[in-house]
Image 1 (cartoon, rainbow, N blue to C red):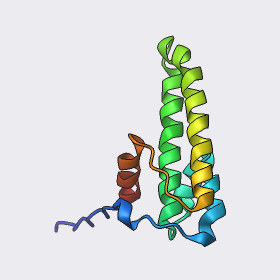
Image 2 (spheres, rainbow, N blue to C red):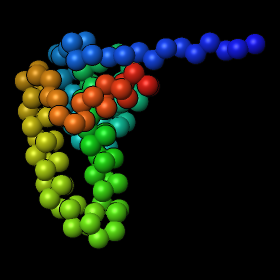
Image 3 (cartoon, helix red, strand yellow):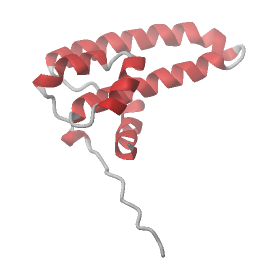
Length: 116
């Protein structure tokens, strides 16, 4: 007997709406480790999950880059500075109730949201 697989939910940017009640969580989700935790804990607020997914992906990508011998070690510091700038921008946007889309990471975050 074949099992039916549930179709993955496909999220779009139009569905990601700011919720004033989740403002603090959205700001905290901009820190990659906290974002990773919030991504799996928060089930209702799509805005928080989206922000958390983006910054968790960013944090994992930076970690992977930093463990690559020589090239990763050389690029790690400039990338880390860039990530801190993006974190600050994300926090400011979230505090204003605006969605912050990281150009390359945003589509991956939407796919990650649908997968979990």
